[in-house]
Image (cartoon, rainbow, N blue to C red; front, side, top):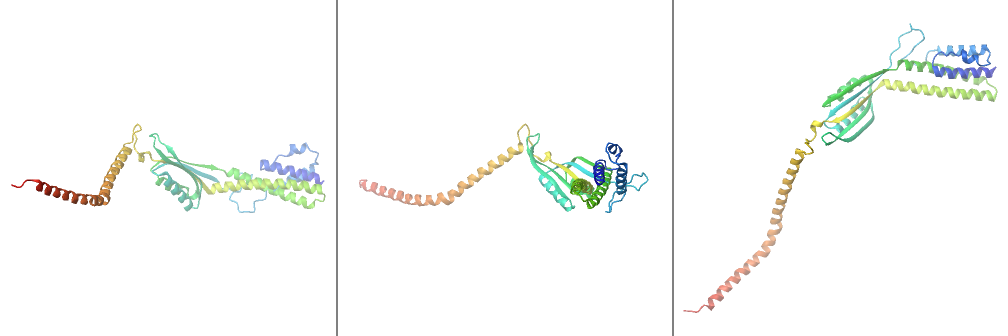
Length: 309
């Protein structure tokens, strides 16, 4: 009797986790040798468990009746932008600071260099941030305000209410199956039965954890909007280049050459005043005195050789 009940419960848990709602198990049961009473009791227990509402305060509740209370929508809102700025690196830092200021965070950022059609190499960046969904419009406004041009803007949403509600239903059913298996495990006396129930319990709990993870992902994605921004350098602020010739670059080279020439002349003057002048004075003055003395000596000698009248 116990083995039959165990097998029926295991089969029901797996089927409920696959479809998430009421499962048409009659064809499956018809191929087994179970008595009709056990199958009906197991199905009744599962349906009763699925009808129990969640104990936690969930935002989304649904039932099979079309006239049930309206379900609050769960929408994941994201956005993407392509902006043109003067300095992509500075713009990326400003977006990072804004995300942290709003209580969000940076998912990824990338800064690299690219060549424009004119051949000039400039910075380009991309960044992905998450901000609270209620501040999505504010974040987009601030990003666009700091841009010279907005080339594209896309805001899109995904309604995941049905997926989330389905996960809730599957979670309730799996938790009900878990409770049933735990109750059977407590009543089991044979080691074989205990091991069989334990293996099924482990499988059900793994599915419960997976579903909880999926629900958590939807909740976080709905609470924090993703903004992807492509940051492009403003080509108008880049150096002018015509056929590979850059007038600005040539003018810059000319100014540098002029400055280098003037610097060289000033260096020569400084050397002359500080170094060459003292050396010249030390050498020229003695030679000058010697030359004057020599000339006087020659004059006197010439004068002595001339005959007296």
